Image (spheres, one colour):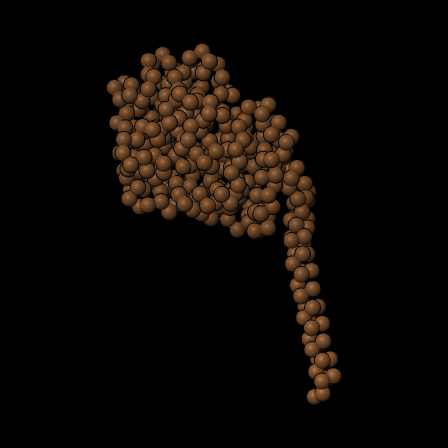
Length: 355
C-alpha cells in the first residue's frame, strides 16, 4: 500500500473517531434533558400526595402543609401537591402502608417519626418498615426537642424526677416521646410514668392542660414555641432538658441531654438515640420509585427549602428551617443502622428495662 493510500485510511479513521465522539457528547448532553422531559411529562396533570403520619395541627402536619405549594412550584410538570393525614401507632401505620401499599410511581410522599429508622433496632417493635429501602427526599429541619413539666409539680430538673414520680403523655410505642421517656427512665433511674395512646403531640399537650399528665418529653421546640408561647413566658411549664446533639441558641440555659452523661458509654448511647434529631422532619417515597423521579423530588425539595418566598412564609408561621438533603438523610440512616453492636445492645437493654 502506498503512502497516499495509508494517509487516506488514517484520515478516514480520524473522521470516524471524531464523529463517534461527537455523537457520544451529543447523547450525553441530551440524556439529562430527555430524562427531565420524561419526568415533567409524567408529573404533568398529576397529584402528589404528602401523607402525614399524625393528626392535623401537630408539628409534622404544619411542616408538610408549609412545604406542599412550594414543592409543587419547583417540580417538573407542575403537579398539584395535596396534604393528607394517616395517623396511628406513632406514625408507623403510615410507614407500613408506604412500604407495602402506596403507589411506587413517585406520587406518594410520607412524613413520619424521625425515630423510624432505628425503632426495630432499638425499640424492638415490629414496624413492617425497612428504612434502608425507602428513598429519602430530605428533612426540613435539624430538630431540637424539649422535656417540659407542669410547673405546679414543683419539678425543675432531672434530679427532681429521681425522687418524685412524673407522668409523661406519649404518642405510643416507637414515638419520640415514648422512646425518650423510657430511655431516660432506665438510664438515669428516673421515676417516670409513661401514658401511651395519644394519637399526636397536639392531643398529649391537651392532656397536660386537662391535668391528665404532668409533662411531655419529645415536643419539638419549633412547634412548642409556636403553639404555646405563653407557657414559656409566664412559667406555666418548666423546661428541664433539651433532647438533641447540640443546643438550640434560644435555650442556652436549658441542659442538653448529652451533658448529663456520667461516662463514655452513656454518652454513646445518648448520641445513638438522639441522632434521629438530625432528620427532624423527614420525607420519603416508597421503594422502587424510578431513580429519575426520586432525583427530581430531591432537587425540588431543596429548591423549595431555598426559595425566598417559602422562607418568608416559614418565618411568618414561626417554623424553623435547617434543611438536610435527601442524600444526607439516606447516608445518616445507613450510618445509624450500622452502629457498633455493643452500643446498640446497651441502649436496647436500657430501653427494654423501662418497659
